[in-house]
Amino acid sequence: MHFLVWVFLVAATQMWAIVDIAPVEVGSKPGVSGNVAGSYVSKSGNTEKDEYDFSGKVQYDSNQSYLTFFQASYERTETYGLKTEDQKYTHLRYLHKLNEETLYGELFFQGKENVFKGIDRRLLIGGGIRWRFLSDAEWGKLYLGLGAFHENNNYTVSPTAPAGTVAEADESTTRLNSYLAYTHTVSDSAEVNLVGYYQPSFEESGDHYTSFMAELEVHVVYELYLSFIYEIDYDSRPPAGVKKQDRMTKTSLIWKF
Image (cartoon, rainbow, N blue to C red):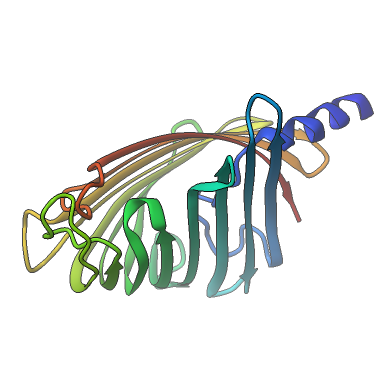
């Protein structure tokens, strides 16, 4: 058993940090809880590369009517002394029970920076309702979220700038926030989580974000978990020179407390 723990701790030096995607409910874990994940990879010789990836979450569950959590992640890669990845993410959310079982109100604030996608700063604040319309021991739980948020983006290159030009821009818009989330405990040691978002602008129908994430989380030993995530994002109006679609796979070792 101790050998397995050592193996997974060594393997974590080549794993990615993540943020939680599984829906949470009041009473599921009363009091203060959370998790941390991280890695550092350094290569020299034929390849000169340094990678830093960290994430964490802290949650408070009142066990009666509300819960709140804060999560953050940071990812940075340097190759031959030059940055090739640099992104930061923070998310604060408050959920309040509107009835005994299925309906929640939620408020959230989010910040994001991703230099290599042309986003110098993205801030948003919003809210809505979340309805759990399926809860079955065999089939899992399914949630629908509807709401809205206002965002402010500071782009290093404006989405409307001609290709090859540099033109910083500040843009604000209000968007519909809609999502479907699914979680299912498939065994004593494994859980599947899925979430998909569709976020069109109220001001311009052709301007929308979509994203989908799928996760398999496996309990390893003690409070250690392995998480395997596939993510795909689509931005219909990205900054000039940035591709509309991104795909990513992540493997993480997580310590929960």
